[in-house]
Length: 135
Ligand SMILES: [Zn+2]
Ligand SMILES: [Zn+2]
Image (tube, rainbow, N blue to C red; front, side, top):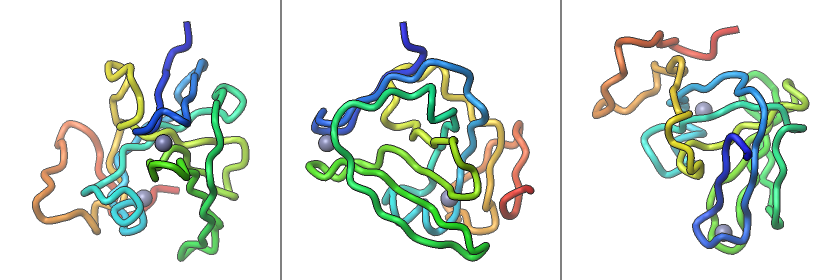
């Protein structure tokens, strides 16, 4: 039994992930807001090797303030954002909480880019919040 399963809105892209979750966090940066269309992104980081992907994704690549190159893999049919990657963290893949079926595993450990959060978002005070990305 895979630990995590999920799919895009239309079902053309699906995944099975089996392995340890390296970390999970809510990201309130502007990029995550724009790409998700939501107030923030909840990202679940796992080893790329532990995630089996079925279906074709399309990749958007962009660079951020730090100079890092980031990738966003999405379903070309329905547009769902599926997987995030960071050139500075090769081998690590970010799954997105909204596409995961096993919701009991979604437990963000902290908030990042709290400085850019929307005013209407109340942060969970029981987990740490960082103004930017902690190093
Ligand atoms: Zn789709
Ligand atoms: Zn972000």
